[in-house]
Image (cartoon, rainbow, N blue to C red; front, side):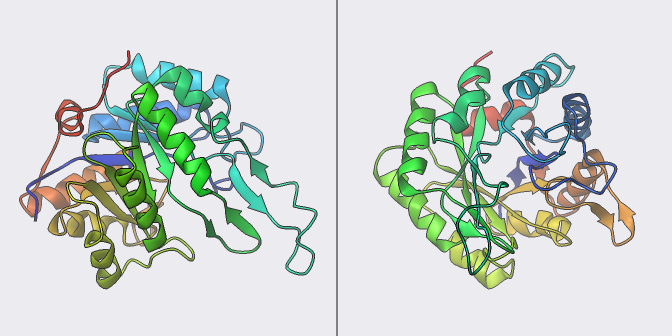
Length: 294
């Protein structure tokens, strides 16, 4: 059990067009929601941008510039964590005729996926540490070479990677990155539970992952969907920090749609009731030895 945690609010995600009206789409909406989450007590905000026509996640520098400008010029100062997860999706044509690939395939070079990170220099960005299949013909493709190239470049520019782990094999990649000296200071790891065909969110699986973490890791754990808030209570008991937000869960209760600020507030209420204090953004920066670039 740990007595202090940081809370990351995952504001919008990059999946398909959301049906819930509270999921922000435009840079202004995403920034406003992130700012509200920070005012509610989030230590960090995890940000994607969405194409304004398709409403799906996209790597668009103009959208990221506007988003970052709005958050950085606000009256709050959360740790900013940008995704690097766009540009790694392969969609096969069909089970029997995989080629040609579907037009929905969206693949970029490893360093091209960091274009917004290079320019805008957030304190943290995500780094997916392996490949996995989703429903239908969708594949998330992160080769060993691509992950290593991205880790090396992030190390060079001083942006801390949050290493995304969706199953045990991804954690083995994390261990290799640490052994190879590609991760500075304590590795920052996100245990992503209950995604389709990734690690389930039962306690046995969670503890199996925790028990394989590199020595000295700082880590968070979250569950997709209805167990997001229960995981806010569970995480500190296994040494983990907390993540909530509309990227992963749309509901405050079974019939009540949430906002990001409400999810943060509810997580803080849960944590306070079990005697866990939430770190401020500056305390999180100190804990993780983050480099502030602006």
